[in-house]
Length: 140
Image (tube, rainbow, N blue to C red; front, side, top):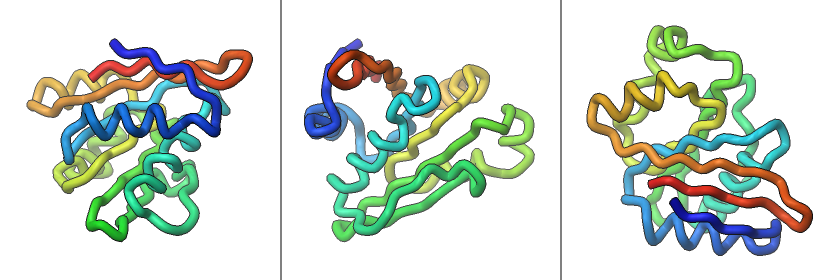
């Protein structure tokens, strides 16, 4: 596990570590309380991937898809109101076949275990606020 402490202006440290560590196709579970910075981290990743425009939390749409100017794709999910069964019934599991990074907010332990059991490498980032920023605990 890697721990990085970063303020908003230092998020590039986290993004650089992820770019060096994760493969071109990755599923990343983001954990943290409300307003911990899950979407903020996804926005920093999007910017680094050359994605222009606003990156918002997909709270009501469940998924947002973005394409960078360098051909890299980013998928952002918010599963706050969705349990594992509903996720599978909606067919969202098939989205993980698409090339790019898949950032999953509020993904359940059941979904994470399922994805790992069918062969996906799933990274986990736990975000916790501290006095001058956030601590990012990263398991790859």
